[in-house]
Image 1 (cartoon, one colour):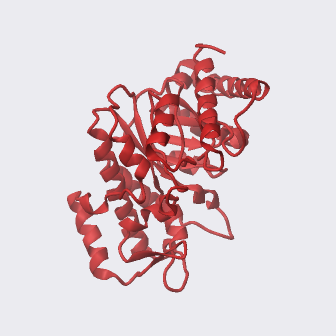
Image 2 (image 1 turned 120 degrees about the horizontal axis):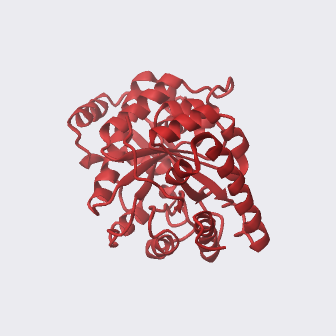
Length: 340
């Protein structure tokens, strides 16, 4: 089971990609906006291999990137067996993220982060990677039971490698699994096997000492997500708060257990909100807060909530990305009663 992370205290942090090509500039922007909960940005404009799915290909046995797609040799038995052995022994060295796939992470780790409350990074989740990586017949490897098992364990080792690097700063950590494909839960068109999803998540959670989260940018079966007991649930509250709050009983139990919700309140796919739009976001977040506080009390809402942009800010320019991040920080400050 994932560990409980420290009280979030309505602080702000970021999610996913930034448009920068210079890792230093990206990390300085993150630290300026989110000094208490910095996150490791991904920079797909710098290198396409930093994009979701492609970044984790380097940790999978028998995998290679061909024309922007991850193709897997599911008959790489020796390499697959090595993953099982590494998982049992907790050997994560062979699953390290290279600078080509994680330049923002490597640069962020070079800064003094000892004043942070929580360090956050993200890894492509097993459901999403399993549906996007394909075998020679172009069938998603999620549907290959043996390889799906290996994939979950390889990602667990990858997540552990990230966690161990962050823990060197002496700060609590959370590794967030980026899982947009969880929107397919219950879909008859692109079905996900729930037991495969659960087993892979459990593999990751069992190997980490700190927190493990889930980010899903669209609507999904939130009851199922809560049942996994992730340390953090991150989602697009700007577009999907209404659907999310329909799971009120599950949400209340999750928050009272110690889970944290990262409320994606500031849209990341458009210019930063002006004063009028920001005021509207403040009002919407206040309404969400009241709804949840009616279930668990305001103190629990504060302790177990973060504020974020909705998702990666890849489409903006660097100044625009900084403005979106600052808007998220402003929403958090106002919610804490520290300014307009």
